[in-house]
Image 1: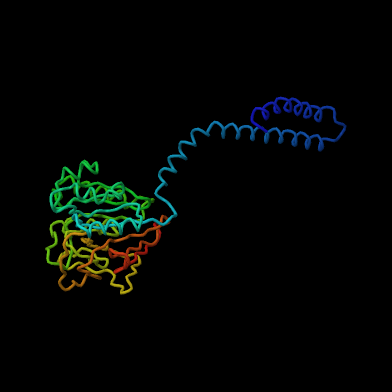
Image 2: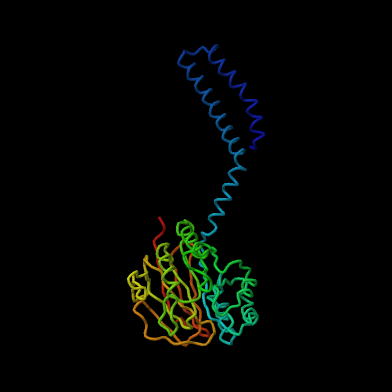
Length: 354
């Protein structure tokens, strides 16, 4: 029965019921007990029927208001998906045949997002790199490197600043720049603090990934950026960053979960050195250097104690697989080429947020 018919029924029924009550009270030949029961039943029916009508009115009146609230709640919940999705990361590309192989490798993984970790073209010609990445350009996000002409890349990717952040489902991604001012007084640092503080508390965010170019830690010939490390690694610890992605050193290298060492920042504190590379609720982020996009390769010295894996002389990508229902994060370093060999693999498992 629709609402208008329902109201018409009420108009006809209500006088009849009142008549029944009066009849029962004044003309019934039954005793007082029966009269009282009749009055109670009739009045109770009236109360219930009016309550139904009132509820239906409220429901109709509130439909528009609740619809807005519902849409807001659903929009906040869009980061929660159940499907498996993946993010690819790689830096130090150049414009070589290996770079083309890197793009082919990425296309085969079919990621939702590509994180480019700086140093895109070493010739000063941005167009050659733009041409090579054309099939994946619409899903690519960048961190500026030391070989970039800032204006070309900022314009191409529509960036106002070299630092920014975004969400991909239940993952928050923060891009920082090692190529501009990043000290404690800088706008970039203030942005990073506010951003990480906000999203570390967001109930719809389960993972935080940070990308930048110059490496904080590494066993290769290039010295790490220790100033950047001293400022930002403590932030990563404080706000529970899960994965820090870096380039500059043309190798693949991965640390164990590590926290900053105030006494000796060259020796971070290893929080979990599980040889199976499965890390449950790690206390510090894992740092992955993925400078293997196509530029000339570099060499590694003996691995530092905090390094879990080091690979030189190979080109490839880091494929990060996640699930919208939070757990786990699985990452694989996949070599370029037809065989697409997995040369390293690790997994982070975390308890649900409380």
